[in-house]
Length: 204
Image (cartoon, rainbow, N blue to C red):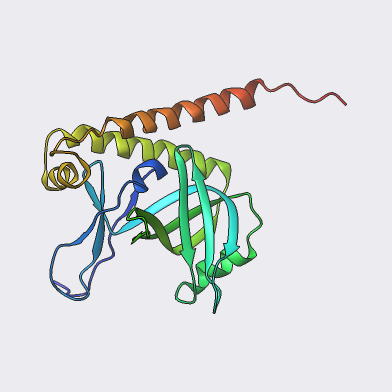
């Protein structure tokens, strides 16, 4: 068996759940052990795969370029940041002309504000411009994955118990809001499809 590290699976997650995933942990004391974000639906994520509309980019760096991008999905907004250590992603954000659909693979990052709140962002490994069909397929697939995690949540499991502990008051935590968000995203997709099918043609 090879001792080479394997790349972690990139989890599909909606913004509403990702932005709640403020607890991170390692599963070993090794210095280079992967850092995981704990998704509230009871799954660990070292990497995430998101698709949405890149609505805004901004160089927020002081001494050097440090690009912020906002990516919107049907449930909310992801924030991502790329600097000198993510040259390809930073280049994409520098040259992008929002709005455009993008697919992003990256790592969750957390930081605490002066007010004590934990904000969650994505450090992108890759950013790719995609089409509307790709975005729609991602919404469907991510909704299915979210619903599967919510169904498994009540059956227990190591990460479900961790989520209850870290995100719930007195150990009580309701993953139902993420099920509702997933169903709402699917409904939005269906209504968008119906509108485009019934939209009258503009008269010449």
